[in-house]
Length: 318
Image (tube, rainbow, N blue to C red; front, side):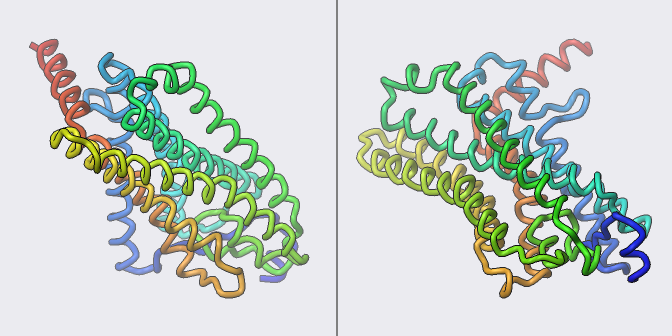
């Protein structure tokens, strides 16, 4: 092992699954979830995806669904960054990842994590304005404002990710090259460094506050105000629709933020690599799969658009 560490800059991903039949069954289940995610977020040929629906159906060309299309895109990139590599490593038995490959994985994973946190906050603000200030909605959530929110989420997430990626790859790793994770996650790489990383760990904490904690507090405040307004609605139907919308969004927020908080806000000396890997499954695999299900199957407008598009496809075939 010492000789290997000295002669190569590659890393080893120890992975999530045990190298036995149980691990193979779990991998097949993860591949199934990955396939569901691909179908739900992008679609294949004649099957309808969230992004495709929003592009072809003008009735979904609203700020909420434009934001949702970006959420689907981020989920696609996020899960595609981790699952294919995990599957190849397990099936081939080769767990190495190149220095450059590790940097690419860090960049895309961190970009999607930060950008999605900001995007979820934008979606919460959209619902807040729509329910609490409906007359101001066309002004506060104009198409230009929506585009600014989307571009801002991508740019800020990318800038933060580039900063962390460059620094993480410049840290000297001399103890080992074996990362006890199924992806190149910076907190899992820091124990391998041969330098004191407490300052950088503090930087990660600040970054997590900026891109996860503060957006989460904004989401909580927005939905708190929304629920207060909904409670005083005179229309039973309007109250029911608003409660349904809020519950779906809060479900996504809980699944996304809770594992991140538990992982990144814990001191490094009390964290468990096994626990970190299990929690990472939630925000790298389960959440990208659940988002299109939660936002589409419980949404009458999206389901109606699916029926209309499928009807157009069947008509063209005939």
